[in-house]
Length: 67
Length: 155
Image (cartoon, rainbow over all chains, first blue to last red; front, top):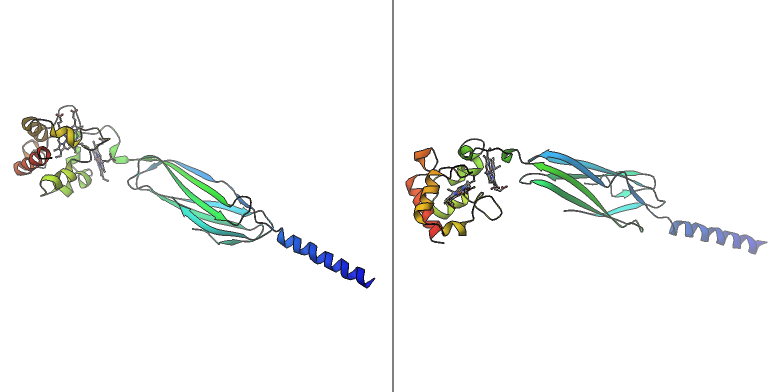
C-alpha cells in the first residue's frame, strides 16, 4: 500500500515534470505585413505589430533586427 | 521597439516599427526580424511596404524652376561661390549622373568646348537643361562657367 502511494506520487511528479518540459511558447501575429500605400517623401511611418503567446510556456523575444 | 520581452501564455505584446522616407523614392520594403524561443517558429520576418511619392519631382517641371524656391535649396544653394569640380557636384551632378536623364560627365567630355559653353550658358531647348548664365537669368558668372569647362574637359 505504502509502496503503491509512493509509486503514484512519483508518477504524478513525473507527469508534472513532463508537463513543464512540454510547456512551449507559440508566437502568433495578428498580421505579419503592412502596406502603407502612397506616402509623401519625408513622412515617418509607424506601425504596431500585435502578437499573442498562444502557447503554454513563457515567450521570450530574444532579438529584433530591422533592415 | 517591443512592449515587453517576456510574454506569458495568453498574453499579448506589441512591436513598434518605424520607417523613414527621407530621400526614398518609389516602392520600398523594410523588414523586422523577430527571434524568439518559440521552438516551431524561432524567426518571424515582419514586412512594411510603401510607395514613396517624391513631391518635388512630379512631372511636369519647368527646366529653370531649379533656380527658384523650393527647388534651389537642393539644386543651387550649395554651389554658390563654388568653382570647378565642387560646382559641378553641387549644381550639375543630380541630373548628369549615371541612370539620370542627362548625359554623364564622360559623355560631356567628348563634346567640343564651343558646344559645352553654349549648352551651359543658354541651356538645351525643349529639355530639362536650363541656361545657367547670369545673362539668361541663371545663377552662374562667366568665371564659374569657365571653371566648369576646364573641369569637364580636363577629366
